[in-house]
Amino acid sequence: MPLSPNEAADALRDISSTERRSFSAYGYKSAATFLILWGLLWMVGYGGTDLWPAQSGNLWLAVVVVGSVISTILGMRAKPKAGRRVDWRIFATWVSALGFISSMLTVVGKVDDAQVGALIPLFFAWIYVVMGVWMGWRFALAGVALATLTLGGFFFLHQHFLLWMAFVGGSTLVATGLWLRRA
Amino acid sequence: MDQPDAIIHQPVRLKIMAALKPMPQSEPLEFVRLKAIVGATEGNLGAHIATLEDARYVEVEKDFVGKKPRTRIRLSKQGRRAFDEYVVYLRDIIDGAAAD
Image 1 (cartoon, rainbow over the protein chains, first blue to last red):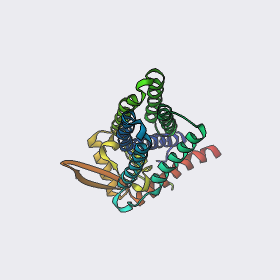
Image 2: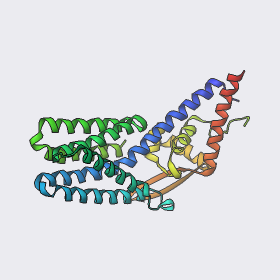
Image 3: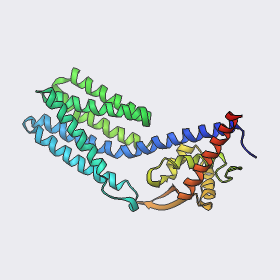
Image 4: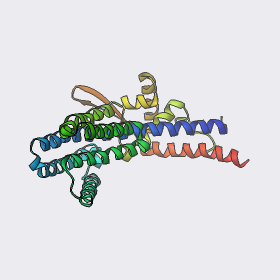
C-alpha cells in the first residue's frame, strides 16, 4: 500500500535524525584517538616547558612534528585496508594550523610562555565548539571545558599555569577522547 | 517507483540503512554502535541485518579484536542505490501531494 504524504514526511524525518546521529558517532570515534594522543603530547610539552623554559621552542617543535606524523599515521590506519593510502589532508591540516598559529604569534609580537600556552588551546577550544555546532554537542562541551580550564588557569593560577595545562589540560583531552570513544 | 522497496520499507531496516549511509567510502559500522544509533535490541537488529544481507544491501564482516568477537556492517553499492531510490520515492510522494 502506498504511503501517505504524512507517513513519507515522518520517514524522511526518521532518516534525517538517524543520519545525524550516525554522523556524530563517526566524528566522535574518529576524533577520540587524536584527542588522547594530543592530551599526552600536551603533558610532555607543557610539563617540559615548565621544567626547561629555555628549551621550550625546540621542545614544542619536536612535540608538534611527532604529533603531526603520528596523527597522519593514525588517520591512515583508521581507513579500511583496501582504501588505505597516505592522506595528505591530515598532515596539511596540522601544517596549516601550525602556520596560522605561528603567523598569529608573529603579528602579536613578544609574548611569554604562559600567553602562548593559553592562546593555542583557546584556538583549539574554538575549533571544538564549531565542530560541536555542526557535528555533535559533545565536541562543543569539550571546547567549552578546555577554554574554561585554560582561562581559569591563566588568570587564577598564573604562577603554575604551565603545570596546570600539562596535567589538567592534558588529562582533560585524554578524558574527553575516552568519553568520545564510548559515545 | 510505484511501490516502496519492501526490504527497506520497515522502520528498523530503514534506520539501519540511514545509519550506514553517512559512512565515508563505505566504511563499516560496528554492531554495538549501530545498535545504539538505531535503538533496537540485539536480536531484533541481528534479524533485520540478516534480511538486508540476504538482499545484498549490506555486507557483514566478522572478526576478532584480541579475543573479543567483532561484527561490522557496511552498506553495499546495491544498498546505497536502493536507499537513494527509496528517499526519492518518499520525496516524490510529498512533492506530489504539494502539487495537488
